[in-house]
Each structure stands twice: as structure tokens, then as C-alpha cells.
Length: 136
Image (cartoon, rainbow, N blue to C red; front, side):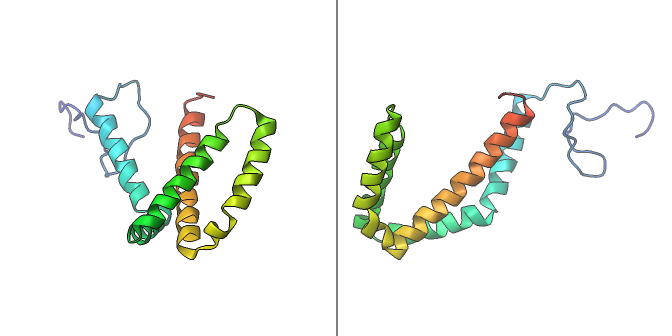
């Protein structure tokens, strides 16, 4: 950098890399929002997200099947958020038996697997952020 020139308020390093250390500087609202947008775009480029989109498009071709999948997901969510741990175990067993044939449908199985893979990726990202911020 030349003498007597002010450093730009740019987070990019002179050679184009991003500097992740704040160096005592507070990020402005627009800066961190841009970085979040970059993270979102990065996730959209992952195989997990692309597989999810492909499988979702397949499911959307069958409106009745989509409704059944949505119902399955809602029931699964409700059961997993029950407060009684002992009852949860039995409810999950019953739920799995009830939907066993439904999950054998390749469209259903592929969609749920892709959704789970994407959810795990998002959980890893969240865990990394939480750990890095000592927010445990």
C-alpha cells in the first residue's frame, strides 16, 4: 500500500482473499449480510443441496405423494418433539411400522434421504458457528 493512502473499508485482502480476523474492527450490517449471502450461495453449490432440489422436483410432479410426504414429515416432527421420553420410543416404533411401506417408494426414500443429508450439512454449519463463537 502506498504511503499516505487510507485503507479501504473492504474485507478483501490485497490479493483477493477474505480476511476473517476482525482486527478490532466491527463489521457493518451490509458486510456480514453479504458474507451470509456468500455462505448461502456456497451451500446451494453443494451436492447435498443439489440432490435435495432434484428430489424435491421429482416429488412435486406427484401432488398427492407430496401431501403424503408432508403429512409424514409433520407427524415425525410432532412425535420427536414430545416431552415424554418413554412414550417417544413407543410412538416412534409405531410410526415407523405405520409408514414402512410408504418409505419403500423410491421417490419417497430418495427425497427423505436427500432432505436428511441437507439437514445434516446445515447442522454441521450451525455447530461450527456455535463452537467458533463459544456459544455452547
